[in-house]
Length: 221
Image (tube, rainbow, N blue to C red; front, side, top):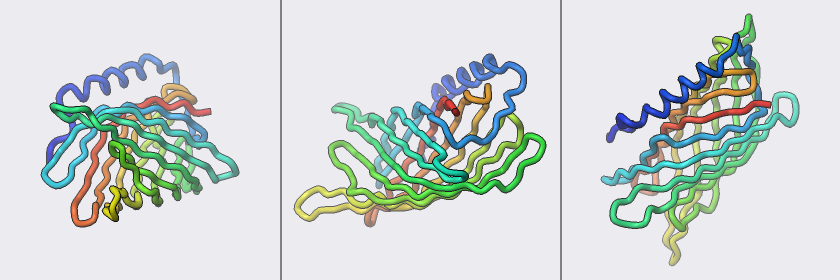
């Protein structure tokens, strides 16, 4: 498998972590909040199908709001350009919207552990084609082992529906996705995020995989 990160990939990550250190004043004493907006830059992305591996970069915007005790709504939109040599770069995107809930499992001396789950509507966009829309189910943990550090692993199943190419030619896409997110809370409201996201999809009889490294900034309110 083609390796995700090249040498230049880590330069913006190092810069962001250094910036977070400069922002730190005292102890942030952050808590797990379910009201936030997060902007991510896709530092390095790769989509592979069959023998083809293509790189892409772009941005993602995510929002979450707690609408009732332990219940929230969530949305995410991603837009990127695929790097194709000798031609116009096609777009790649995804959109999801839904809701979920969380259950506090542990809270002690500044540390906290929550389990959560979401059910979402999902779309996948590639060039001028968009899936008919599907659904996603995700389960994960939000762990605050230290007042300023959060670790967020998750696993899920996604069915994007199908691309309709006309003439009855359709391509169904579904599979598993995994993510690992780390957050450094520079203040109770401001955090720097580093995400690793992977999707292992099946497009009818072929594999379609995406691997991403994301660097983001979150504002909690």
